[in-house]
Length: 422
Image (cartoon, rainbow, N blue to C red):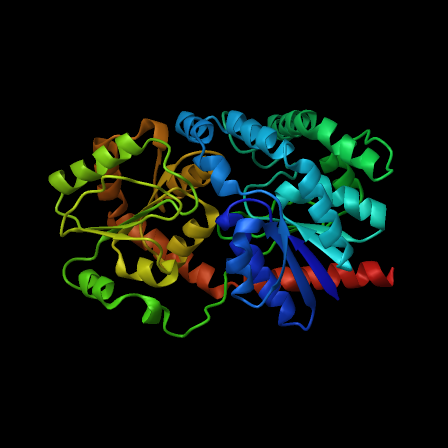
């Protein structure tokens, strides 16, 4: 079967779909992965057929307006900004999606691609499924939608999902219906969420059941599979790590990792000041992974190592604690390594994961807009407590026993095969 996989977003959105592509290829399927143009080299390095989509999420977030909204921590305003910027490219993206999807037999999309892929599937008669990498958007009475956790009782919980869906649908409805008209489809009268549920579209939440227990009121086409972990291409993850970095790591006590992956740091002056204060007021060593961050004036100190990128699966095992933004890929790697974690969340699902980690006593959580050196020092000290280490050990064992990739591959193959036979 030829799968068309749509991964819209940042590196954290694309990497799990690279893992999924490899899992499907291992079952003798064909795969075409569609993602923004700037991910071509990353995807093709795994010998996966790549179909580019117009746009570059990194440029959107690094723009002055993107950084300002990241600093504010206002998720809805940031999503609106991304949507408005994306709208300018939407005609090109939709054409790219259309051409890519025509090449495949069945379609699998992340959450951000659902509005467009559902229309293409309806027009072409192709079956489709959704793989979500983060917090649930499926209605449940068991807990509220992310960001609405002021109360927790069944009627309120269901209402929070309906409010989110109503807001999101109102924002994208004009663009979706413009696309539908261009395809010769009738105007949509119900939201994409409601239609997907009434059509029993398979939705796989690629999150560990150890963190997200599947609600009892979800129907059978809603799955919780486990994380989609990118298989290691080498048994020795350190073989591409420069020797001087390895020497530095082994030179003294285990360092504290700091990194934000593909999330730009919203307030460079504040963060640089905090780094300098950490070096002055603590005895810890720090390894800082730049990722997409552009940081001039980083501290020059023998206890501070700066790297452009490095395998998390290997590095986290060399660290005594990690300070991360809370993107689900990085968080999964930290939990699997059993490293105590401070989630310094910036926007969106990062806040949700940070709150969950704090609630489960697996780490600490600070929102970036409330960052201070005192709070960060206290958080690092708190995560090194024995109780957190004990809790982490149990969760790490569960995560390392899971095979979310094969669970997701099996769910997709079963769903599309039964749909084809039906």
